[in-house]
Length: 356
Ligand SMILES: NC(=O)c1ccc[n+]([C@@H]2O[C@H](COP(=O)([O-])OP(=O)(O)OC[C@H]3O[C@@H](n4cnc5c(N)ncnc54)[C@H](OP(=O)(O)O)[C@@H]3O)[C@@H](O)[C@H]2O)c1
Image 1 (cartoon, rainbow, N blue to C red):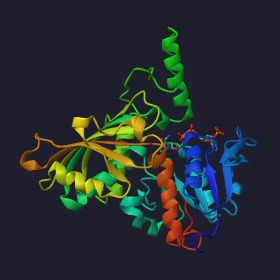
Image 2 (cartoon, rainbow, N blue to C red):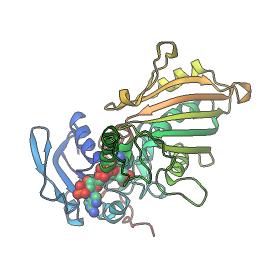
Image 3 (tube, rainbow, N blue to C red):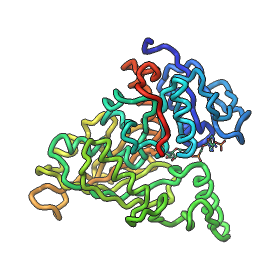
Image 4 (tube, helix red, strand yellow):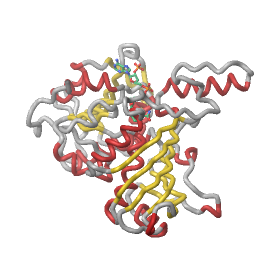
């Protein structure tokens, strides 16, 4: 199969925020799509979705809908992925899954394109796309890991409502309007009003006191960076921003690292851009990152609370719908095509089964 052989690509969750971004990113990057199959729940079946200068009818995501699909981009939640990703893979599709259903399965590669693309070599039909907060952090940590080593990471996130999906975007808009009109702010997606607020609760609470979102950052960073014992802690906070997640990161390095050298190392990572001119009030901003594929890093400085010049602090911002979800998924698909790893059926050792 040549690099440009048109492929049949399915987008599962095509009516959602991430699914729609995937359709857009596939077109922008001129991914070799022959047939584009848009799938969602039965509620959306029959709906016409504009794609470029045409419209495509949405079909219901069923096992049979994956017949003949080469690449299936899933973003319809973990339950759908658990049920349908093995069905798609069994029919010969290579699944790139955006949910948390498969990320920590040892037989499933969890890949950030510019960090561990080589892990795609051992996929057996399902590949996991990391959580958006992990995604924008891993390439930056990779630069530090590869130069001076990492002893410990503390990351605090400031995450946009689009990370929750279409309903949360509508909820923030509705609460802003209600505030201006002097009406009560009704919360249904989140446990408290998100407008003019900051909620230190993303996903469910675990027995260890962390939220699952925070724990995803911990476990996914370890897997992607091949640092199973990495000391890392996270506090994840939802804020009233529509698109882009921001992160305040503190790293204790193994060897000393100056801010200047850190900027050079981090800025050399593909897809990472340094924006760091405090005197000119220039640093990464959520609204500026929105709509772009890059990861922006600024406020790079030494952290004097760590001795011997081994402390580094910085600020990372990226569009959670693009690099945090859709763009990385399409980049993974591009690597598969370039390396001739589509279709998966030819490479699979054993049928993929859902975890118990
Ligand atoms: N938003 C982010 O930044 C982000 C980042 C990384 C990963 N993700 C993950 O991506 C997934 C989707 O997120 P989103 O933000 O796009 O959510 P969303 O806007 O709420 O969209 C959800 C999508 O899932 C579809 N869906 C729901 N139930 C279904 C079913 N039974 N069968 C088939 N499709 C079904 C919906 O179709 P209908 O329109 O028919 O209901 C819709 O297309 C989630 O797993 C999320 O964790 C999101």
